[in-house]
Length: 362
Image (cartoon, rainbow, N blue to C red; front, side, top):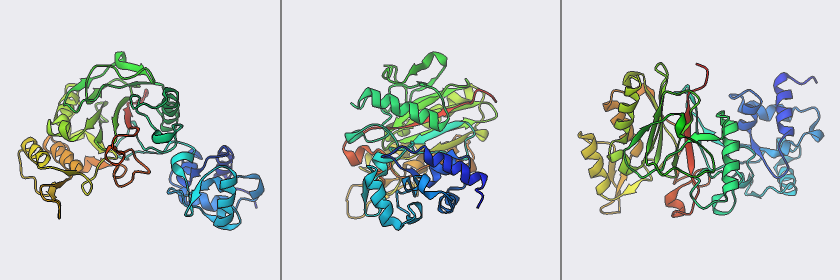
């Protein structure tokens, strides 16, 4: 049977997976040039006319679940082959945290600029930093962090080792960035403090770091203005979202055109706080907080706060359209195997990075 162009592309990618690593259906489809064909990858491998020449067992589902089709001998045989290859398998799932071949990240169809919300999967770091730690001041091996950034940058489409980073202090300072703010990954964060970055320069990737706080990426595609904002609860209560929109307007953006996406963070069901947080948010919004937080049953004095909803509410107040607001990724605390969570690890962790860049060519 003659192989289709899709099958041939899949075979080429699968052959590149190094021993001791695995890739997911979605990654293979994306690298093969068919980003929406993740389900078809399994079929392409299943009908592979030369299964003995292709290490199909190194491909798993997006959750790491094994599929016997990829080993042509059932999931038991696939597990044997993976273990022989140095990949840990437990309860029918491969260890994605340590063995994912390429970095996993999220994007949003709302944003046309090059952008990515990283996860903790697909990097070189080990120990408490396994595996895709992009934080440069967490105590990780600097060379591992540099390699993680190189891999993440190449796969996500930034193609550079120079980014704009600032020291995040949970404030509401927003910096209008230029090429003079670029620094090479591994040099450490500059002492200049800013929790928000805005630019109209092309080829200038803006990055913010999170591990429970909300990363917010925004763009006005018509004006060519972008922003990356670190929204912890304190910076949110200090209205860093409003400051970022105002800075974007200085560069020609219009609120009605701005798109805004919040990446992985503490979602409403997991963000437990004391009364000071709802009070601070109500003071910032200056309107009814209905639906944005609620008392936690069985925990007197505790509240569950919808940080994503609060940020979106404030952005609507600033003139953004509801259809231009979105989210990407899941809850950091409820998915600790996929995301870095400061609360879950009690501070012993790496960091996600959320990055946005205007492409060089319009």
